[in-house]
Image (cartoon, rainbow, N blue to C red; front, top):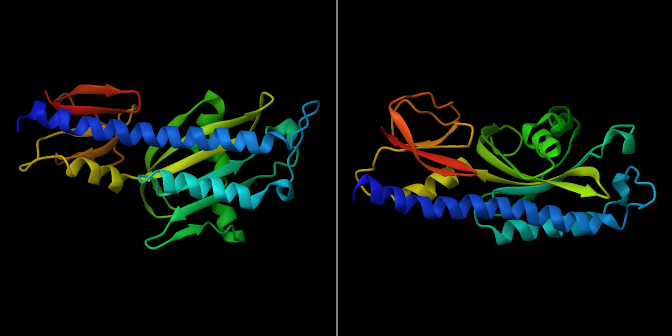
Length: 233
């Protein structure tokens, strides 16, 4: 199989994976928006107390997201309303990640909270500022799995006010599996990056996951809104 055929073989599953994960985060955001709208006054949007959240229903939506998308390793809802609505800067996180044998809810202990201020995380900040979907990574997820991860996130707005982010995680190893399943032996030389040039996968030595691609020896051969594929120039 030549490099052109190898390229076409890998594009379709990658487009399916990235598009499906982006769709999952956006659908979860839509479902959470519908769920929480009834809790917010249309006349004067205010802080939503953590006790007001229908936890069981939220967790059911998250679990459905995980079951509907085989690529996701975790999913959740990060609540932090805009400052005028939330003067005490309260936040809440509902997150479920897939363990090897079952789904596990993330427990927010005092130590976890100290290291889990998601308000500083790029997937949260960018999604809020863009007011739209955002795909972040690869990065090492030190909270859930200590593995290279990508996060697809979508904002939750109610009456034009920001109330948080819905997100799904995809392990980089899962993306690698999708690529390796369709590549022939010997594997052709190629590099996959995110839209900002950060390496996600490579069959070439010297290109590590997470590095920024800086090489005149490679040329982009396929540009997708969520990823880029490179071959030797």
